[in-house]
Length: 240
Ligand SMILES: O=S(=O)(CCO)c1ccc(-c2ccc(C3CCCC3)c([C@H]3C[C@H]3c3ccccn3)c2)cc1
Image (cartoon, rainbow, N blue to C red; front, side):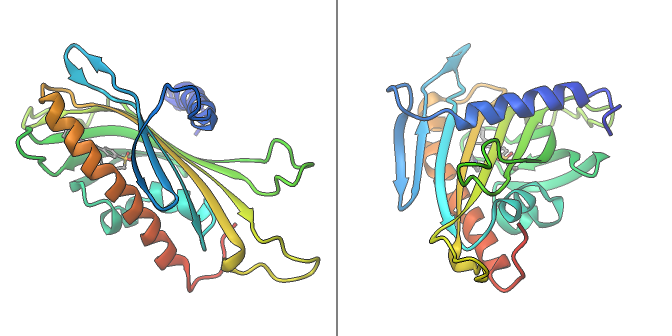
């Protein structure tokens, strides 16, 4: 609820991340490091105290599912194990509101690094079109994941706590456009996705190892997620 102590931070970070995701990848700041079909993955090489914290920005576009369907499945705890192969355990520590949950996740160990966990709030929100006039007809949906503290944090020191800021922003376009009164089918849905993440691994791991893991894991992660949502939704009524 908007009275929760985290609410001001959730509101501020979500809108900041929306702006950040909507910035282009021009200007030579972003380095293209992986490309598969419509999916392009960029990173900036950044180290903090000798730790690789490379910001990542992935852009993708998929047919057959809406931004609402993509964002809902990215946010929902109920389906996380169906697509996110990076996690071993997931606990919902708190449901702040119908659109904001606090997760505790144990990630699978990535050899030779120590096992990591993440504790973060996850907020999903619909952003109405800012220029409905020029044909921007549908809402933008955003999921923002931000590391946070929580009283029920086990703090058992069994593994290393990552610090993450992630945003998943998507918008649906009807392409090809449909004639007046014609029914929109899933073949007309084109959803553009921008996924941004900054993960501080929290404890030392060799830069070469981390960059190799990112290069291997992120393309797989995003491709698997979008394929999962497409398959899950193809036989369902369209949720705009
Ligand atoms: O988008 S989410 O919010 C979805 C909710 O789960 C998300 C995604 C990824 C991570 C994560 C956590 C730990 C690691 C590393 C750090 C050192 C060793 C493990 C990585 C790096 C390795 C990269 C990676 C990317 C994707 C999948 C798995 N592995 C990523 C956390 C949250």
